[in-house]
Amino acid sequence: MSQAPVRVSPLIKFGRWSLLLVGVGYGAFHQNRLSKKEEKVREIEAQQKVVRDAKLAEEKKRAAQAEVRALEELSKPTPKH
Image (cartoon, rainbow, N blue to C red):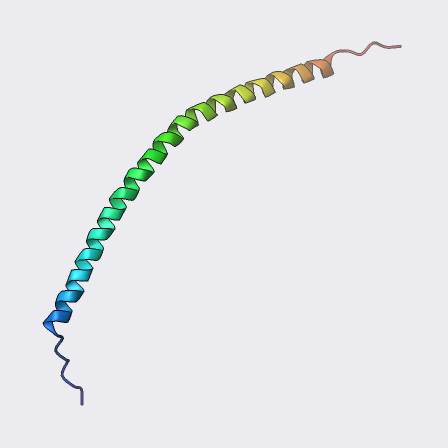
């Protein structure tokens, strides 16, 4: 009852394989281009991270100093009346 498979035209086969190869080539080209772009973005982020980390360290230092001062103020004995 099953029929024999239909023979596909060589032109259609050629078209399919051509489009597949063009798609793979385009994908490789596009991936390469995006990878280069992402590499540049990561370099910029790495530079910004150094600056951001320095700022955060300075803020932590200031906050710690402020906390120490506040604790010193709280620990001072109050004069009795």
